[in-house]
Length: 401
Image 1 (cartoon, rainbow, N blue to C red):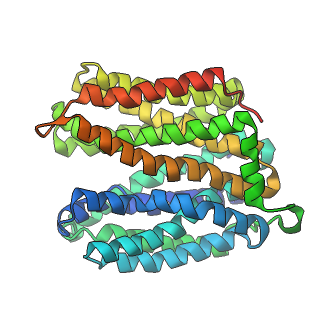
Image 2: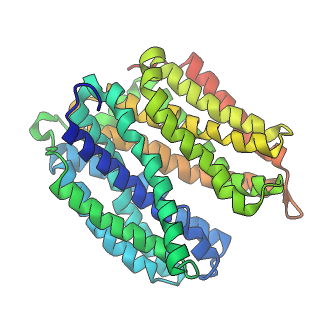
């Protein structure tokens, strides 16, 4: 157990983190097979279903953060949002037309996206400034573990009950996990009241006011750009691996190297690196890991090196995305902590992922000739952009506001 931390608090916060990402991991990597297969959706329609989460993260987090900072306990918002989410997931599981499914999935995304920053803000609220760097990685590590275990559970379920043909079971599993998360949030999570009268003025206004600091503005811009470039990885890696001779059945396991490294790095290296190198160099190292991955992709690398290179995506996610959330917790005024976490989620998971998806799609179409991708030219685009992000972090970002 972490020195100085109550065991019961650690278990409750870890359960919260585990369930939050198990819900997401239950359907997000798998649903495309149902959309493109049994439902016969086009690639564009499938893309719009997957765009619901980024769209939700543009709209909901700041609103939820304002409510949590000023009016309603965070744990009650989590319980309510996941309870509504349960209903929307179960309805979505039986929708077969694009318009109806998109509508219900967008409604679900609005509620789920509201919970993502609140999970972080509740955790940081109870860890406090003194414990955050040391204890947060031991809680964050449950996110990739949950994501992976949800997929393994669903695979086992399909082997036993043969439910893969229709593919709606991923949404059903996510709905069941949402019920559990609602119960855990309402009954077991620690009391996390809003700052209320202690917060002067709008918490959204105060959070956005942080952008007047040039250092924080640089962080938000690079977070937006870096998260956008991550979509090249998600949209292109599976096909790239297959074109390089890796069997399709081995691609999921090959890409899972990233999740394994993410869990290891979160537990073993994140807190230590932040304490030793500070946020400036931790974030710079994280961005550099994506740069290294794209260099491997551009170079004439053998399949084994491409698979091993997946570890750099896991490292980048830990040292850039998660470390960025820790940076926001370190610099945010306590009375607007939820809204500040919402701001970084809006930049990364919202605007960054949504526009990154559109940009990656345009670039992939540009470098697709007669049905085959010109991979070296394609990967050079995010590679050059990540090089600029690394230089900006090293030269302009100071790690404090």
